[in-house]
Amino acid sequence: MNVTRGFSGRPRVDNPGLPPGQYDAGDDWPVLSAEVTPDLAPADWTFRIDGLVERPRTWDWETAHALPGSVYEGDIHCVTSWSKFGVRFGGVSLDTFLEAAGPLPSATHVVAYAHTGYTTNLPLADVTGGRAWIAWEFDGRPLAPEHGGPARLLVPHLYFWKSAKWIAGLRLLDHDEPGFWEQNGYHRRGNPWEEQRFSGD
Image (tube, rainbow, N blue to C red; front, side, top):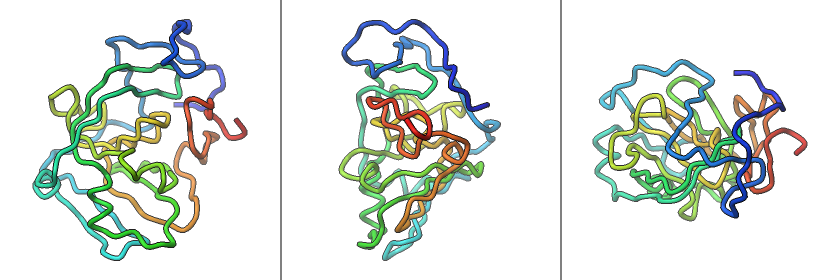
């Protein structure tokens, strides 16, 4: 997948819920990945939080599912111009995992990394306060592998490349460290409402 400024797609429909430059994908959910979809069984999935935390922790499928469940209902927006309205993801709030690990006061950013090696960077403030999830269900069914299953990071208020598929962990840092797409020209934060698609936007 190459980084280009020439995003194309359906014409933008006048909809106050659409960020600038987006179109409503309706029932479609385009599959866009920087990597080949891995063959990752739930039994082999783990999620770890380390770095600037008091208690580095690792969860497997069973221990993660034993945590209190949480649901996101709302919209998602991809940097390639599509948006989906009224989606429903199930999983666990990232706040629950972070509370168990205990972020240190010096932590300001995270690097999210996938079981495939993919990485993306986020301010810690963008994944706390009920703004992010580890999600393993979509519309009441197990999340499909091509969409990040068995589990993905979900940060719906930012462009969807920040919601790392096949999530393996978060490393908390005291500085911003760009991930895969950010090193290849994408914006460090990715706010859809400000069209933060590329570095310099």
